[in-house]
Amino acid sequence: MKTQLRRILSESARLDVSVDSLGDSDDLYAAGLSSLATVHVMLAIEDEFAIEIPDRMLTRRLFSSIDTLAASIVELRRLQAAA
Image: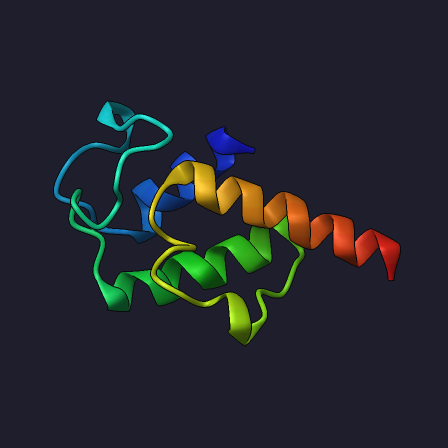
């Protein structure tokens, strides 16, 4: 999953640094993630993982790192499977 997230970030986030140079817990905003880019990342994540990110989760914290994105996807998949 984190490999897929790294690909999405490299294609959609327009970061100031290479995604390959980032650790999973590194701050994506410090790496250059903009609020506009989060929209592109969100749409790519929803397509890639066949999920819908609810409005309540659309916070700065969600997009703060690869770890937080991955944890949120796992949680959304769990909730989707339980429904």
